[in-house]
Structure formats: C-alpha cells, structure tokens
Length: 144
Image 1: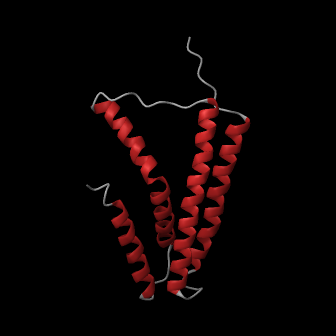
Image 2: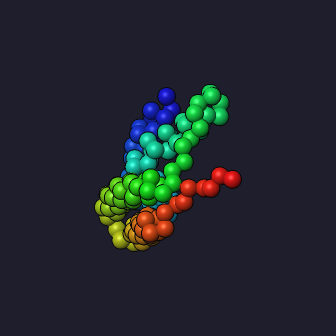
Image 3: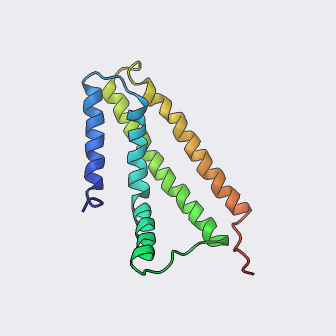
C-alpha cells in the first residue's frame, strides 16, 4: 500500500517545495535535492522495488536467489541505467526549472541553479561507468 502511494508522496513533495518558494522562501540545497529525488524516484523506482522484492523473497520466502549479471549482460544493464539516469536527470532539471520560475528571483533561487552542475556530474559518472564496462566487461567469476 505504501509503495503504491509513492507517486502521491512525490507530488506532495513537489507541491510543498513550490508552495514554500512561492511564499518567498529562499531556495536551499534541500529544495534542489528534492528535485533530484523526484527524478530518481520516477526513473528508478520500479527497478529499486523489484531489486528489494527479489532479495526479500529469497531471504524470507524461499524465493529464488537473485541472478548476477556478467560480461555483455552486465554491460547492457549499465547502458539501460544510462537511459534511466538520463530520464531521472531530465525530470530533475524540469522540476528545477519549475521551482526557479516559481521563486522568480535569481537571488532566492541560486541554490537551485547550482544543482545543474551536480546533474552534469551525475550524468558524466554514469556515462563513464557504462563506457568502462563496455571496454572492460565484468568477468564471470572462476569457480574453483
């Protein structure tokens, strides 16, 4: 039930940020972090819940062990994460622009503007990771 309400909680978080800024508050790092959280929640939410469900089922409900990816399967997953991260960053950037527009004052929204640099760093790290695993794939462990 709580997991099903996650999108509602995300909308409440966005509304709270917007109301806070529209009432004249100065944006802080927390406002920007909320934008990133919203993007990650939308783009990665299903994958994170599936990851947790698989491990919980294995640990407590005699479910199958989680599968580990290696070689090209791991590389392909890295590139799918690049796409997910791109979606998360696009959502975060959109929310940041919305909050900057609501604040309507460059002085009060400086903390939000500075978050775009963090989005760039996140994108670069994700891309370097995928390129690295493309060039040097994660090897299947040798069983002795």
